[in-house]
Length: 451
Image 1 (cartoon, helix red, strand yellow):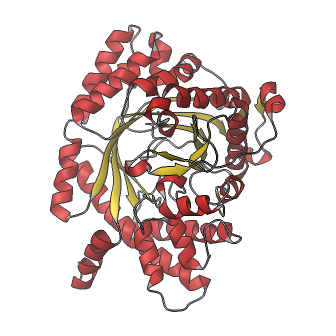
Image 2 (cartoon, helix red, strand yellow):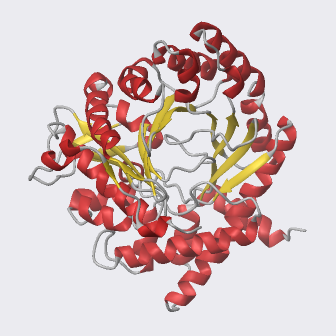
Image 3 (cartoon, rainbow, N blue to C red):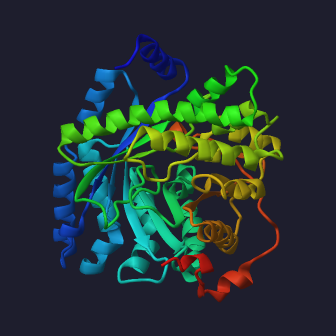
């Protein structure tokens, strides 16, 4: 039973502190849509998505109206399309266009799953799908792509890493007339999870049910506001307050997820605890770190503060729900976080510092804008570094990097909406091309042998 004070507190969180449900994401298996004829497969996919998700947006809006809780995005994730492509062959862009048509029919914001899992090598369909990513993202508006290039169990597929450097660069070039939006919808993973509700990296894993609802909550502004009201206290007290706040945020996600699943007649999957920032003032992970005591995000002490924040969020969240999963932590997407943008513009937050921060949080180098003349080999080297952090630390890491074609360090790339805008950040001037050209596979670390 909620008390009057708890109800008023929740209302304040929503109205003044940017509390929202970032997404309800319906995961849909497409394994039963595979067909040796690509046109028949596409028709099966369209019919299944539009049947399963026909009420997703409506139910989300009904829950918003019932509880007054903003649900910012309604999304769909599907089985990695490379699995379906392996059966049919043909032009992978046909699948992307089918997914785009289905997304438009049901009215979702994004649809993820134009994906391949190649951490140990390329199976049939994988290479063809990866090569089609730039064109697929150019021709669609709502489709997101991802590629998993490594894991703690398998090591890092450096042939795939090399390929992804080229794909990211090409994707920026073919969408240069659209502010290089292509790579903003493309994530390169190590240790990708099967139940992630957040874009651009969401896909529906083969170990998931036929259809499921996953929820992603968001509350950086709520955590920051709670810390701002805190009088004194040491870092133990700070961590405890963050835990209590995360508990409240997660309970709301649990409520929405359970209600949406019941209304749609599908299982409730997970609540992802990740603090997902937006460009709105006050809704920033960087500002939380500054509230803890940093003059500006990126200065010395940032990694320690972020580690504490990430841990406290998880501890508070797991007490609030038995359905915790996804990525669950604190996102640090530069272009989507007002505090990160300010710190990057000031030069306090650098690519090297961001890389260190990714060792202790979710998910990785996210929405990083780099000069348009960056080489594919340098992009691959950045991906390899991030994948190594994930592999060795048994955690999910990722890279979503945007070469700003025609722009240099200090300029800005504007995306609009939740994607925000990003300052062009400098990258290292020395080449790793010889290493990337070697290809092969970085072997799995010793900690992979846990059986």
